[in-house]
Image 1 (cartoon, rainbow, N blue to C red):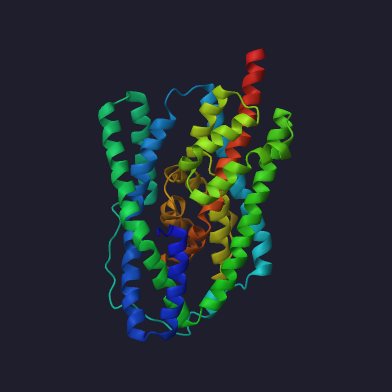
Image 2: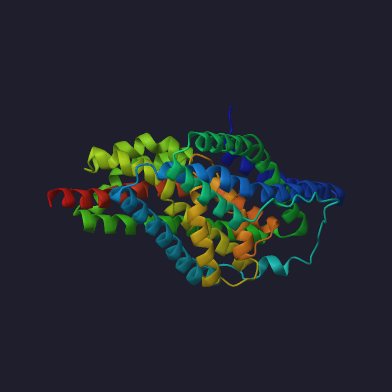
Length: 385
């Protein structure tokens, strides 16, 4: 029987709690040696994720760029950034009241289990350098239409995707096991566990509110019943929850969008494009999860830091479709530079995000249907004029 990544993560959490309760100190320190090294590998590999996945995505998005294509991309990015800003407002208003500020910091001095060794793997470049490189080569491929560059970066993308599937995802449950074992042994698990549940419930409510706002706006513009349109997209929403992949859910999203009365021409253009560039659900989830752990760590949720985080994430997130947990893995370096996360604390973000990864995917692709309604309305009005 195959167990999905979510099932493996829950098993890893349970085993980690047992190991943390009953293992001697040397076992926890040995596990932390792996955890710290794997954290270094994540930091090393993130620039390759950005270059290998974002560069081809930019090139493919730029194909045949016209007014309709640019309008769709503009609406998609605006929706993604709105979702991030909305989630920030919810987190800033809610978390100080429902989470124990500084809970993690207050328990930091109870017990510690330093790793026996840490293998330092410094990244070849920073995340900003990787983004600039991706933009330069992505736009160059659009302008020059070079088959050699396209083949090269397509092969790099294949190598990066293979590394994520064969190295990151198989080792991720063990990494989470290490984190949970350390939290249990140090006495922090009770605080973190209760905080995680509150964070996940807040994320679910936030993504649901984002969808209601998206379809209300789309209904007003397209002159459609927003609740009926959203109900028609329910099969796509549930499929996204189940398979955690926008790419795998694409046929269902296309079918349900057509049922909402969107023309076939607009559906075939907008839905595949938005599956790469419209990531409102992933953005909202990342803002909620990171903000929750900032509060638990005793920090303040700063708007200035989150503006930088959201703009960079909206670009890097185009690397994530089709890769379970791609957003949270690609965001590691941004969370460190913009929000001040340590690899150990960001591992908690990975654990909570991956536990409900399908929630962000479901919100992403359901929101694509709202954008299709808007673009179809504008396209029809322009054709009549």
